[in-house]
Image (tube, rainbow, N blue to C red; front, side, top):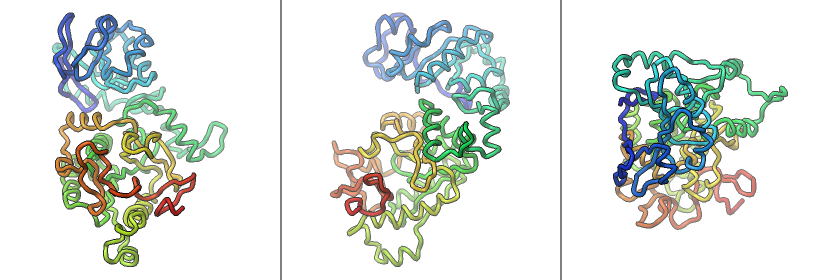
Length: 417
């Protein structure tokens, strides 16, 4: 049956298992709920999904959710709306996998399906033939405001829209909201939401016109950049061109930007006068890597971010011990909101996303560079080493730019603070 997501028709990579059918090794399989309850998760499957009837109690699925990659919800007819409630409850339980509506739904229901949390819609052939592609696209774009806050893009509450137009950022008691209070509110509001939907909300609801992405165009950058291209191709993308990057990174930045159609890429370079005064020979990275990062990354980024209310990073919790407790939303030293939409993604999930969307890897990843920075401070990683072992090898430095030590924000060597 045809499958569509928010962008149109998409390939279906899942296999539905009939009663008694053995799961093909490594395949993505969808089981009937009764079989999952009776037999458990099949061995050897690449990923497991479940198909649930529209009268299922979403609460009884909670025990399975941590191991499920997909939940398919039956829609026996377009007039039966119980699947909407199931989807909303599953998202409320924190389910982050794919939600699929399966059955004869109609185009007019499309925006509401997306709003309550569905990712994909599986429609019978006969019904799909009666509904043109433009019908689905028109329906998707027809609803821009709702009474309830949605869980997916396209569902902006009229009350949220009104506050955004007024530029309001206030608590219910009328007091001005601090950045820390805003971050806490946004973390509670978007906890469990998919990265694409958090990005959409940040760009169009929370910080319209005031959001930028900071990207290194490194080993894993393509995933987040692709998500941004689906949200707003003109969103400002700040690329720190330190003057010390690998030529392959510069070429990758150009080719990937063109492939994704990104029109808002801005090259951020260090101040020429500061470089001449502080690093005339280009060798500061040797005796003082922190000072070099401050000169070539931190200060240029501070200047570039000045016009923005919030910015997006590609940091993830699995990358370093310093990032283990990374929040979705946090506050930077200047009081801006910092968004980490991929905070809880791991390397496998990023790789799967890149494969699914046919995104090119940085060419140096295949050469033994799973993490890339400036050329003088990046070395190959040996088999079995941590992926970031090649960054600032031989030192205890793990991050560039601004460090937080004992609650104080400092620049340069944290040991000297």
